[in-house]
Every structure is written in structure tokens, then in C-alpha cells.
Image (cartoon, rainbow, N blue to C red):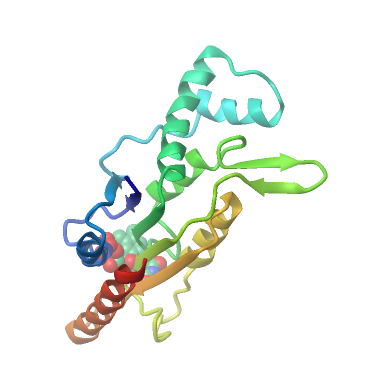
Length: 208
Ligand SMILES: Cc1cc2nc3c(=O)[nH]c(=O)nc-3n(C[C@H](O)[C@H](O)[C@H](O)COP(=O)(O)O)c2cc1C
């Protein structure tokens, strides 16, 4: 059964990024009822802290050393997360923008899955090489500022270039971004931004 992995990164009940993901997935489920949705909520599922054995496992692998038993056990959690991504035929990431970039839980997930031998490898002659196959990926980013028309009032968007590069590094280049914003401030522009983004997402779900 083909699979879509949904990585959900907002802790809010009234999340705008989650509402955008719902609009997209409702339509996606209609046009592809046979697809399985693997929902990974980064605030509900326990992600290991990236320290201790799992961190030392990364350095062991980079240094060409065998894992200790503790490192192998700790690394298995990162392997399971990376496997969920590599088994997905489509990926949806819905996330808030926090302090110009992504929430720390999404960064933690990336720190766990961007591992040598799991999602990239290093070749002395060729440099860094991705290990994941490319696949259509959609990133929904909700922000208080308006990055659609550029009314960002002095705040910049480092989430989009960061995620584009992090995903490209492991092999995922077919990535489309849908910003939702402004989500804060006067009601009317926020409402219009939500409506426009949802229309776009429903439209994209048909061909995704
Ligand atoms: C900790 C924190 C930092 C934020 N930083 C930014 C920012 O740098 N730029 C911005 O436009 N909005 C910022 N916001 C506003 C959120 O992006 C906005 O509320 C968005 O709707 C959150 O997504 P969600 O509704 O899916 O949770 C921030 C919000 C929080 C809680």
C-alpha cells in the first residue's frame, strides 16, 4: 500500500499549519483512498534526546568504528525514524515558523535522521552523497508574518531555505512550500491568507 508520511510539528490545538495539513489530507484521502497515512506528531511521539549513546554512535560511524551495544540500541531509534521517512512515497511536513526558523522538535527529528549510513554518506572523492530516493514533498509553514506578499515587517524566513537544504542533503529535492500567513494581527488579512492557502493546498492534493 503506498504511503504518505505526515510530520506534524505544531503543539497548538488551533494550529494554522495543522489546519492547512487537514485541508490537504481531506482532499488527498478523497482522490487516493487506497493510500496509508503515517502520522508522526513530533510533540506526541517521544523523540530521543540527541546526546549520549546516539550522538556517540554518529561519531563512531563517521570515524569508521564499530558501535558499542549501548550505541547500537540508541541508534536503533534513529534508524526507526529514518525508516519511516524512507518508506514514504510522499511526505507532508506541517510546521510553525518559530524565531525565523523551525521549532526545535522538527530540528531534533532532522538531527536524529540525518545520519551517515542512514540518509547520507561521505565519499572522500565525491564528498557528501544523499542516500534517500527523491519523492514529492510538501512543506506547509504557518507564520505570524506574511511571507506570501512580503509584508514580513522586518522578520526573515530562514525556515524555508533551511528545510530545502536539509532535505536536499539527504536526497529529497522535489519539495514544494506553501506558506500560510499572516496568522496573527487583524482578522481580515489572516482569514484571507488562510483561505488562499487552503484553496492552493486542496488543488495541490489532487495532483500530489
Ligand atoms: C516561539 C514562537 C516564535 C515565533 N516566531 C515567529 C517568527 O519568527 N516569524 C513569524 O512570522 N511568526 C513567528 N511566530 C508566530 C507563529 O509562526 C504563528 O503563530 C503560526 O501560526 C504558528 O503556527 P501554528 O499555528 O501551526 O502553530 C512565533 C510564534 C511562537 C510561539
